Image (cartoon, rainbow, N blue to C red; front, side, top):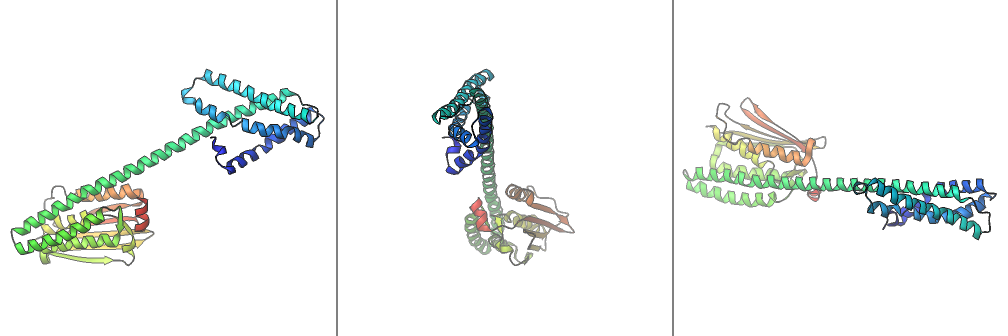
Length: 349
């Protein structure tokens, strides 16, 4: 079915667009005969209505003869014959209507020429419309492909993070088991609870920042069993930040790095500071940890930060940023991304 016939609204708009053409045809008939304006309209009106539907036929021909798969000679022959037939329909319809109304028939030459021209213009419009629709479909397919690729990449990044923090946690338990079996068992219990929560939240595209912060606290509770008083944590969370959406497990690799590459390398331990604030429609998260500037970098120490940076880039594009670096014995990571509703963010995933 022709797209203009799919809805009544489109059909009405199309027929209204023919009003100027009907006026032009009336002008031709009135100038070529002695008919008054009302008689000219009565003669042209029914014929123009018939011809309006005739000019919808190029849609079917244009689809059967696409420009990219047809030769020029084939197109010229097809549309020359079709336009000539359409011109005969218009001139014949006007002539027949005039005879039926017992009015002086207008000359068929000008009407045939106008019919020919109108049909060829219709062909051009139909080809343009088909090309525009093909372009829109291509854009939709490209957008769908980008969305699927984005979702696949986010899923892959999440799957890479799960073993990352699991292996670090098992390493911590192994180190503790050789020193204190009771504390190692306590850590296993805490780790089990932590893993159940992290796996449940990690299966979601987005969670509230409050849930993400609580997950980070749970992880630090596990590590406190190992480090004791050597691990100190302070928080400065601005009210309202916990309602913003955050990619699941976003802070997890950063907190792990703060412990593994920071506190673990200090004999007396150190402090991890976690802060969050809102402003200009965005949420800013700061994570600071003490570290030993003279210690050798641990192999793979930049993997977690790279994952966080890539996840924010894939999800938010240029609206998100990650700044990280050492200064005076403190390593600081600053995340900034739009503050969205967790419910709305999950519905878009």
